[in-house]
Image (tube, rainbow, N blue to C red):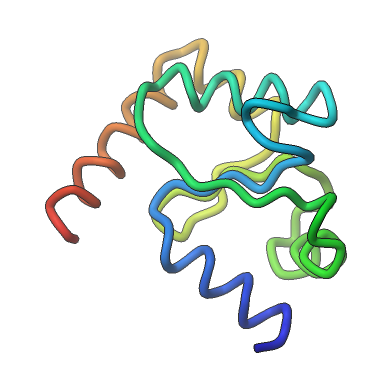
Length: 110
């Protein structure tokens, strides 16, 4: 499977997906740390991909997403945005609502 197909599959297979540097428990940059903490604060399970250990994804995803930086949060196959947008949504309560709805849909098999 080529890198683009792999990215599309990851996005399709995971209702809540964070592309980041490192992991939620061991982020490798401040932006990824803040974004993953905001997503974790929503209290729902989510998938993540460490772009540092997946250099092909790190190179191809910005072109596919038309978003140049990491982290990138994808919910229900839609790009939510990067760190600033994630933090802004978290502070307003929008992120929790979005994540909870996606998690509820996933639990119901939608």
